[in-house]
Image 1 (tube, rainbow, N blue to C red):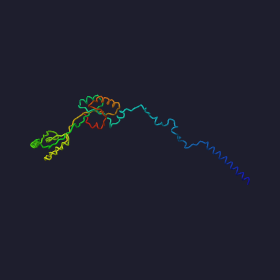
Image 2: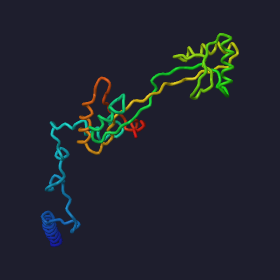
Image 3: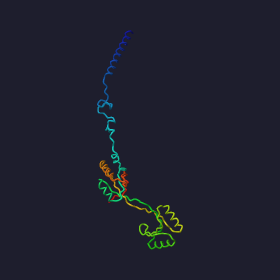
Image 4: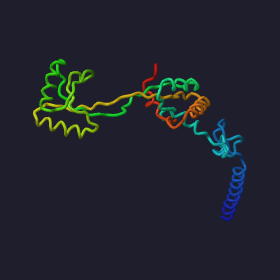
Length: 235
């Protein structure tokens, strides 16, 4: 029995010494996982790694992008328009000094009248007969000889629609089937435009050249290229 106890004690001592030796070998042995693959490293540890955002193409605070650089890329709002010119000759003289300039004509309403009238009639004779009848009744009138209302009888021309309608109402009470027509007085004015935006330097040069022709009657402004295109280009 005594020998058996001593044997168990010896076995435990051997087991303890063996286990301690294995633990030391595991703590000191190199560990290799997935050999053949790249090691995982922190970006900050990699030489020549990704730069911080502040290091990428820094722009000095003193550098100011000129307005023309930004606007020249905006086709919707940055065509230049100079005018209005009162004559083609004046426009063409100035446009010859601006490389790339275009010449446009704009038809606009200079004024509006409102006509009260009868007709038009099939012929001048028919209009003349009605005109004579009106004069007998002391209604002033005249026969329109040309245009859209040719052979109609004008019973008055007014500067406002309200006054025209008041006059027409009085004539309708007298059983005359009169009408009111808005008649615009159209005229032309001329503009110089610069619509080429392919070069900032060309844009700047054109703007400087056009600025020299600004006066009390002509202004230089930025305008939508689409609106400028709605004008009719001079032949």
